[in-house]
Image 1: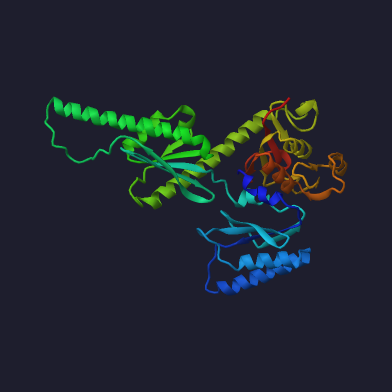
Image 2: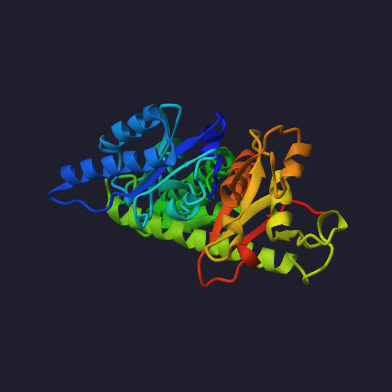
Length: 384
């Protein structure tokens, strides 16, 4: 998961009130249930020490129906009387969970928000393609790629001699030119889109021609959908289902790829790691265990932070300062970073805060899948 969207939470000091709740169940007594839930949230936060202005802001926001598509849950983050983020969740929390702490309780988002990579969708036909970017904000137009003049599929009254051959050859050339133009436009737009997956929809022959003409790195990120065309609302629901499956498959493959890198890189236990120290990191570019992972993330050395759903390290206490990179295992270490009054915080929340600032990816290792010992690991950007 890209956690850059959490940066607004770290631009202001705490303490923070956080609420995770299930919104998947709609019942006849929903208004009454909502009122009870709002009262429960306010009471729980009051017991935890939250101020009245922040509690009131959360209750007011909870009373509103969220806009957009229905979601399985919501996560709300408020401080100093203002709700800063109200996020839909892909999975339902097991219960209403509240917290009041110096750092916002962000680590659960890694599993509840889901890994939905942004994707660029191209609906291709003989005359070009309509482009759409799909990410957490929903779908939005991303431009068009125009080719030659549209060519109909209907019968053309042309002589069945060499003129027919020239006509067909001209049409074939137009298709090839259009495919070249669409592939070139996709390659040009890909870096600025921040997408991780390219979905090609539309006419089978045309989308296949575009796929074949993509540069190799982009071709490896592309999948062809069997439904959807440039016609308005054409098989929209079927295409959306295909896109969702493609995103889920990408997320699974990406996690397996990162875990393979981690396992290969961490080497044998006890080998010297970053800086030559026996700190749990490995010469091949991985860190494992609390001290090594905290150092790797704090120093912006981690490309991917791995959070295991089992293991106690993520729940352990670390020490932090107001700066996103001011995190260490021991209080004296944070003081050495210039923090006069370090505060305790959960390790996973502190590490996600530092990861967001460093553009470090955060992935959850599901229960039953072999991950880092203790539940904390990192694949490094470099080592030495």
